[in-house]
Length: 283
Image (cartoon, rainbow, N blue to C red; front, side, top):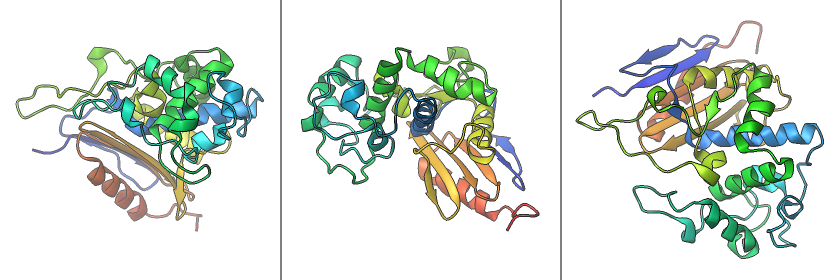
């Protein structure tokens, strides 16, 4: 059965939506959520609310002193925190179900012991971005959605709630099984949302990607983005849903969402981006 997909890009990349996809319905964006959290951090650093190198313990009183972890470490995945502590891992079919506010609070209180890796050494951490989201809400006194709306979405010309952890049920596009029934979704609300629980439409993701990576409308791209060979990118995947957003230094860009496995999504997005002709006047 063909995989539902939505591909938006430019210049030299032809938009394509097919097999039941819809670029105006909300889809899970998984770890691409981190880009929005990182952008909030960058904006708060620009206006002096926090510094990128502000110690985490200065933002969250419950964090033990002396960890050495800064907000930059969390954003760059160099905090020494694991992907997710074993004590917070949920069942195989819903791995983040146990990641409740109470569980995160308990984790923060012993973060010096939870940080099993070496400070400054890269180790991808969903926990780190959950902690970063908590730190940003604590230091501003604002809920996470308000931070997204005020510091990312509205400045990009997008509506409040265009990226959200709780889109209307009737506006969601979700993976379906062989009989057409919706597949159970992972529990990604609450404290894990800044790391992987956001939803957006593909049209919104396209506008955000252009604004953040091509036009640099909010300044330098967030520390969250991966960079190599002239391309900034980030991907995300949940159960049956995968996405990649990327932009080349020469102005080519792409957003691809599929209701299918992440490896194929990453491969198709990168192949499409790099196969597009370079824009005229660029080298």
